[in-house]
Image (cartoon, rainbow, N blue to C red; front, side):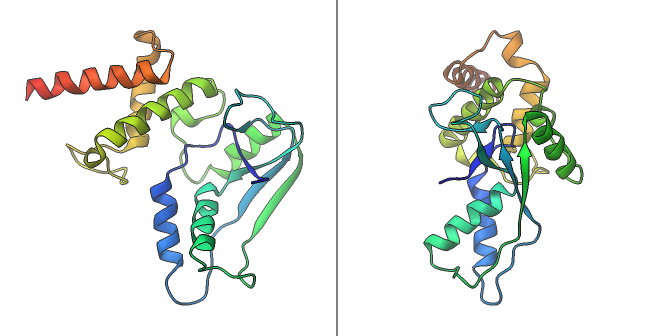
Length: 197
């Protein structure tokens, strides 16, 4: 509860955390590959009911490893972890917004960042408007979505679709400024496509 998530972080995928948790719940010694990277300092974080900015001054936020942290929460709830299990955490002290951006880009060089997720490409409001609308669409049409980025039609990957819509400048071209309006636009386009088939 005391660790937030860096505002420019990629969207959290609960299904990805579930996959990690299921794998790590198997019998044998517990281990999580990689390091969970935290930033301590004046860093904008995601928080419910707070629009942008730093929440309450100095924060500790996740720069990298949010899905592993999600998996750890699941494993703790299911009592698959104990006090003897160790997780490697790296804390970067005195981090400001620019340093957080630089660290995030450096950490994620090995895993390509989608254009929409690159810090500074768009505002957090636009990014999370897209994310919220995509999540609503997934709730209405769960069978349409695949966790695989290389899925075949008629399935789509949520992150790939979100990036394509952003790259096509849909919010700007259609003057969409809210999550609800974007979700309504998606439903309209989906209905038009269904009528063509």
